[in-house]
Structures are given as structure tokens and as C-alpha cells.
Image: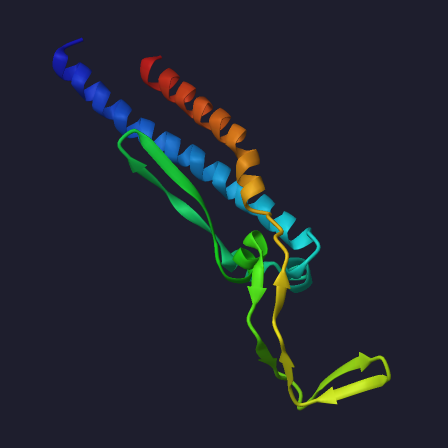
Length: 161
């Protein structure tokens, strides 16, 4: 093999190596996101109350971070925003007004019977920490290692025969 051919083969290996690792990481992160969404909508608390029946809103709050390569380092993960971040990290909701969206009055069962109101001033409250993304990412670390090793083995067989 000539030096030119060797250099070309190394360039090809470098390109394919990066692409194969990125794809392996992308697969694991997607799987981790799906499992985190499942877990988040099943855990007791605010996420279960809001997203139990329809997870589409939760999908918008937990986003995949694109795989980035910096030299020999690859990084990716999940970004958690809004109500999902509040549940993941715990915290407080601010005081806010609750007004009816589809009716003229709010109605609920109080201790003395039905209660009617045009608006309610909620004082805010504590949201307990209910991690659902971080534990899933930690559980996916081993799967990431296996997936990357498998991708590298396949690349090695493809290029070296």
C-alpha cells in the first residue's frame, strides 16, 4: 500500500469513525428520551397530573441536544425546560391567577358544596424534586458504551476486512 493510499484510508476512517459514533450516540439518546418521557408521565406529581393522558406537551419540554464533536470528544444529552425542569429539579411556582378558559366560571366541590368563582388567586406552591431525566441518562451510560463499541467494531471490519 502506498503512502497516498494509506493517507486516504486514514481520512476515510476518521470521517466514518466520527459519523458512526455520532449515530450510535444519537440512537441511545433517543431511546433514553423516550424512556424518560414514559417515566415522567407515570411518576406521581405534577407531570403525571398534567401529561398522563397526552404526552405531546411533555415531548416539547424534553429536547434532544445534537451530538457535537470537539476533537476526540463527543457530547450530547437531553435539555429539560419549563414544567418538566421544575419537576426534575424541584422548586416553587409563583403566585398566579387561575381563570376559566372555556366557561364563564370555575366550579369545584368544596367542603360545603359547589363553589363558583370568576377567578382564583393561587398563592404558588412547592414542587417536590422528581428526577426522571437524569436517572435515565445515567442508566443509558452503559448502553452508550456498548453501542459505540459495536459501531467501532463494525467500522473496523468494514474498513480492514
